Length: 290
Image 1 (cartoon, rainbow, N blue to C red):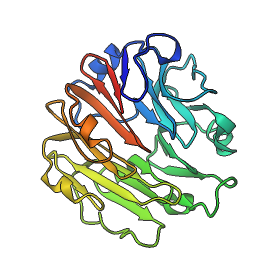
Image 2: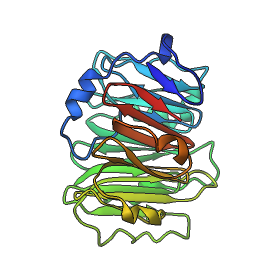
Image 3: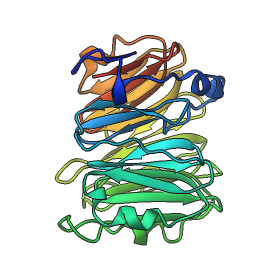
Image 4: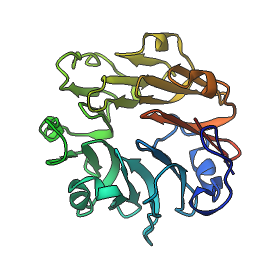
């Protein structure tokens, strides 16, 4: 079942939790905990269940299940739309207005290893370690051109994206970071090494923020000074004026919005924050949201 502190306990339809036992078994012992089981858009969130069913949290009158006989391995969400990566390396999409025309382009791609998205951008990591950013050409004013930034990226194993910032993590554990807000130090992470996970966030008319997780369980951020005190972290997520770190003992460290609610969560195995929402999955397969 799902407990959503902003909505209600639900048992039926698209809000039903169809089980996370397979996911819990797959991530056992994996450090850092992989991202992509949870996708958060502006007004709603999705959690990927074992059978490919997506549990809906929040409000989305036009929501429909993404389904394919290829199987779904992860989810991503944009401003109002959402997408899924299949086991065959393809992307399927849905959502209101299909997030303008870029959704139609990403569905033509193949050999996709990972996909992340936000308002205005969908960033795709291919099997060969190269990256492509599909930037919306219409519907947004003065949208940043991330595709120019990632054109020369090679040997990438993870990507993260915001409206005006973008990150890449190389196989060697080095961080590539770029921001077009005119204020952020784009070389902030140049001297970082032994990084195992990255995340960043920014919204239209918003503030850039980002962070990296070291293999030692510590966190470094250009935005949140308090993370210097964190330790034993196995997953990070950066949202709008909020950062969350999942600890090995199943509790979380959190700075910013939602602190009073999410700080009390226990027995977590995965957590994600984006826009104004935090979503977590517990060791028993419950879904928590605030």
